[in-house]
Each structure stands twice: as structure tokens, then as C-alpha cells.
Length: 82
Image 1: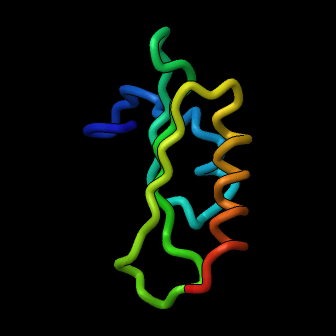
Image 2 (image 1 turned 30 degrees about the vertical axis):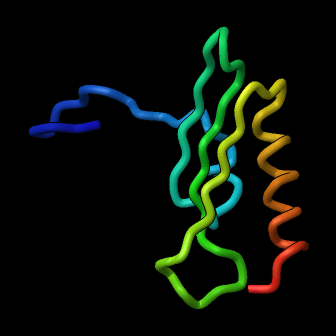
């Protein structure tokens, strides 16, 4: 991050899904002892022309939150007619 042409911080996401799929517009990763691996993802509604409609996926206590998110995304795309 630059401010007044001076480099201050490099901001990099640990959420690999944001890099893989442009249907995700926001995400937050996290981990606590009580909740385990967590992930919140906001994605545009698949196969929709309505750009103001979103799906929010929340994953908690996961051993592989990114794999679980991919499984949920695939299920959403295959199970609903939009």
C-alpha cells in the first residue's frame, strides 16, 4: 500500500478462493480454538442477471474450509434453478 508515494504495507489475502473464482466478491478467513477453521464468503448469485442478489456461505469448525466452500458452491450451482 502506498501513501504519498511511500510504500507502507503489503496487503495480501489468505483466501485462495478469491483468487480462483471471480464470482466471490468478498471473503473472510479465521481460526479460533473454539470454532476451528472458519470462512465467510459472499458470492454473486449464479446464473442471474440480478447483480444485487448474493449468496452468503458460512463455514465453521472445518478441517479444510476451502474444500468445503468448493463443495458448497458446486451444490448451490447444481441444486437451484435461478
